[in-house]
Length: 424
Image 1 (spheres, rainbow, N blue to C red):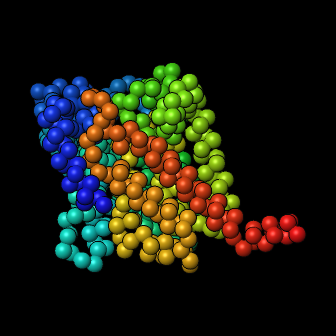
Image 2: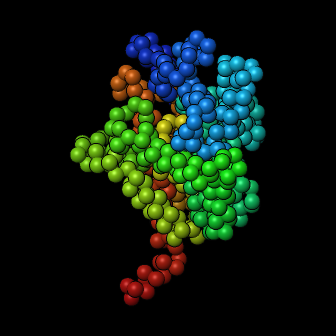
Image 3: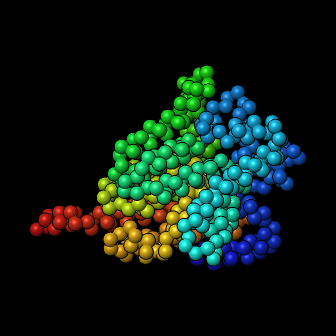
């Protein structure tokens, strides 16, 4: 499926790029001329890779901790800032982008190592590598969230009924890059590992806050400043009044997904309310997910737990941009290392059910739809239609996963016996 979509996408890219005279990278990322650097000495062509340049500018500001990056989140930019002093901006940018690309390609490398046949050895590096939308978007922006991918891969491949300490460590490492990845701990709740979940939460909090006490002179003041900047960004992205109703740049959150859905069904007044109540929607979605996961944990499988845990850090914060789609690379790697949908269902179920098989097809289609660089946009100057629908698609996968758990819970022997007893 992905191979066919990839071939079709490249034919479409040729047509869209020439017929509509639209920069292709702008369909899958940000404006080519993002204006965050001095193009003559720092940019590559007309592009600045803004999320590489902006954090280094933050480092030189007196109110550094008013931004949304934690001390550990700044590490790639601290290193880049020092390296820039030695070898210059452009060589540092190229080294940074190379390391970022290596991180983004770890799922493809995992698939390559796990495949029995080496006849199509380069295929994973194309399908879930350099031609996939999450890789293109993250590289185009130069955003350091790409460095979380190896940790997400470790989490997804090691999470099981009795996970080891490596899973907890991968959650903490992910949260060090972006705090919302502490939500991966829900995967531990899903498998009944409450003690490890507590360790992951405490570790995530510690790794984000302890550096303030080590490298700053006013840790409490700086922590308050950082939390203000972080919550402001998480609410509206620019410390403004609310999430914009515009579609560029694309926002992947659950609130924006509901906004898009209500616009599609022409409930425009209700759609606007989704954006003004984005934080409340996120809290409701998170609480509902946690409750279902906890109640249905005995019906949980590792694959369902992985999918739910990977989706939440992207759709729960009200403001998440396109580079947070990188979790799809990890899900794709898990799917591609199995022999097919039916064998995957059999691997995690003693008896394959229609509902489970339907869920697996939904997951596979959502993954293919999100990875393929389909260049079709509703208007020139906007992101692609698959990117604009990304939040809606993966919100559907999340609720489909929760629905599957509820169905399995209701059809479990104990619940069936209880319902039979009440009827009698």
